[in-house]
Length: 192
Length: 192
DNA sequence: GTCTATAATAAGATAGAC
DNA sequence: GTCTATCTTATTATAGAC
Image (cartoon, rainbow over the protein chains, first blue to last red):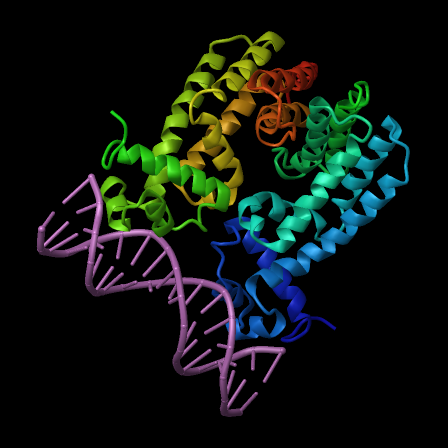
């Protein structure tokens, strides 16, 4: 059991990289720094990953699967308010699982750096698909804005609301309360 | 008139840097690249600015003044819904002036990189002050979330709403419609 | 699976001529 | 106000021993 040296080194690299990339930024974090935190050398990193952005790809891929499942499910549902609410609720649920929230925070904090990485482009594409699914049937600018903000509501209640003693469940409830409000105003306008 | 060589070189550097920093990211954009776009050398840049982050400071300072004025005004007003609405409306107005929106976009796109820059810390501080002003009298988590989202509403309608043929005025109207909705639910809960 | 050593490159910044 | 030339330091990445 447990991780002496060599245990789940690949996973440990992913975890440390995700943390440092989020705190300091992708470009500002060097492989030397990651290696030092793990008490290994840079060369050891290159045994597990073929490049710096391959590390990013490794944890972004995990998250993409979750997004795809969500988007696929939405496509099978009618374009009603009930569907929109269930969709954002399911999205909020994914923010509880394992490293998923950390990956989203990393994504939000490194948008520009990720523009030139294919993992970043994929994530961005999925976020747009989710936003589209949230305002399906009403693609007016107002609906697009509300859909985008309902996603922000979930992220913001996780990352930015300054209330140290609030529980995960309360954050979720909070986010959905505001998101539901925003989604309720979608669908009342005709398509463009 | 016009800009042969030497016209308003300092301003031209600011403009090009702001554009490249926003498009590609602060860390990824080198002084060499900025110099090449202006058909000067790196050394010329160092005549006008003492360092790379001094360029950032130069356009962030401009924007900080506008933020300070807004925050100071808010402090003189009563903590009512009318004040909140007027405040977000005035904030939206500042997004029309000159390079102000570009600076905010740069800020949003380079949050992590700006963490270690004093200009970035100042901007972040001002955004928090603005958010606080928007939910003064009700610092519940729900109010904080709504205040933050009302700011996002303004930014998102500018930067992210995919509607190519929409006018600035329509974007402003859109943002305030959604922001007003969010702000209306603030103030109904007691302070913590 | 991890190491030492190093290649290859590019960055931010400075000195001093013009 | 802009140039050439250079310093210093860091980076990503690879080769090959153990």
